[in-house]
Image (cartoon, rainbow, N blue to C red; front, side):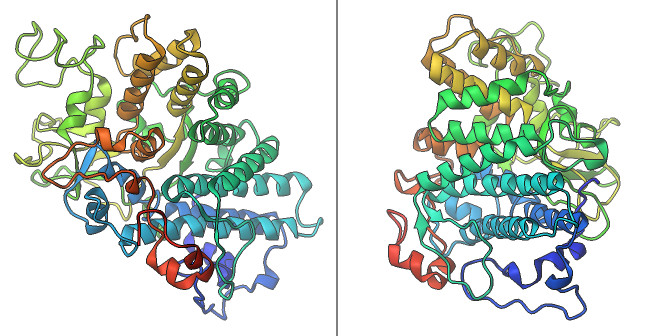
Length: 513
């Protein structure tokens, strides 16, 4: 079945085992006496799938893929916060353990983990007559994948964190922070063990479930993000050949619309449906064509730094390309962004964007010249929550992760060029020069990741792992600040420190009080 998550059904499985406002404190959740009890649940495969829906429901939350995940770009050179105190505090290096975004991110990641742990424990204990061995192993593998995804982000943001492989209830004390290396090793081993239990191909009726390719890609990402490039390249390369059938979606501008959902480019996406019971998202941009132009998503905007960084079609930057500016023989003042990387116009709205009838889509001002376009819909329909799926892992990421890993392990060989140029080809950009050094190719790949994944949550994690944030985040009006080395780790939320004696005894992350 397609996993279109109904949160009323999810409440049956959550019960008191999943903590409200998840921390490790002793929060008591009072259950509805009209709900099914846990004793009457967890009996068959249908119950197990409902539990899997519950884990995915946590990904749907506005604090995660439902809205804020893509806004991590606010903390980078790609975007800037216009409104929203929590992002602005982190962006300006004024955040503290009490900053709301710090607590909210921690909460949603541990909600995923606790729900996954509960699902794994209950499915393991299901009677043999209620679920087949194959279905049991597959669902446990899916939950393990989702848990590993959350732990990768947690360890990137906080480093050492409490590590749970069993569900906690409202009366359990939280645990101390485990070493990041211990968590990473455990999650890598967990993914290795569970990959064989996932199918290579997902039937159409099961869209939204986790396939083997997603788990292979996540394991490759673990290896890459934790400085094991040779292992990462070896893990990722098979995803580019049979039996996998991944391909880049032909048109980047349509990928982030309903036309691009569950395409051959998608390895893992979170499914949203407009209408119904709280199944929609809050991250897409919807324009009512019947109204006068408005400023889109006024809480954030792309930086001129990002816009000016996109190459021209000849593969050269705007400073040296003959295709750019009034000196170009093809220059058209009404279309100043023609001849550029196609991802620019597909990712960023400008004052040159108009409706089919010629009306400007947005009324831009001098201080807000750009807006995010990715996940943009031109429509007069008013949604009860947006219908766009959010892409967590795409084939373009597989190609660029492989290229990065192989370049670090072996240098810029033919396989590296092939992977990078496949991404550039769809963007309408000339191939890389064929005489790059390893260091030059490293920068080309980093740039490609920036352009390919703008407004998709990737850039901040990249800057952290490359340890270059303080060098590339530009000061903008005094609000773009990255304080190294302190800001390479977030502070543990004050709420967690207050309610988790074991973590409090260990103390805050370095540089924080």
